[in-house]
Length: 128
Image (tube, rainbow, N blue to C red):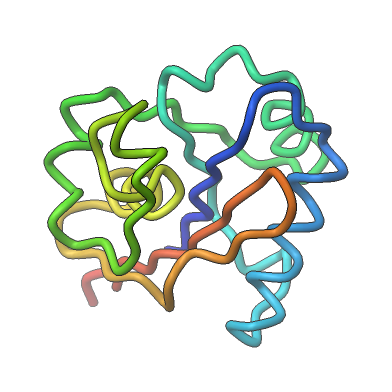
């Protein structure tokens, strides 16, 4: 399972979100069809651009509660002081992806920032 974690500034468009997602996918040598779901911090639930991007891709959007974000924060690779001040976690995209993918998930790389959006990809290996 692969989860795309999304972080953003207020008012992002679906196009902004999709551009960041596509850039992260390209870096990881993956395609849109490889993504199982999108995740974002619960406080971003009102961001129409994030919701619209998930809907355009036909993906479920998981709004990750703060407690789950904090529980996943020790597994992140990057740190944004702005995000720490706002959300009390090192990276919105990375922690959302990790939290939604589960305790055994790992990042495919550091978050990618493109304009007002960050995207991180996390993978959870399915049990055989």
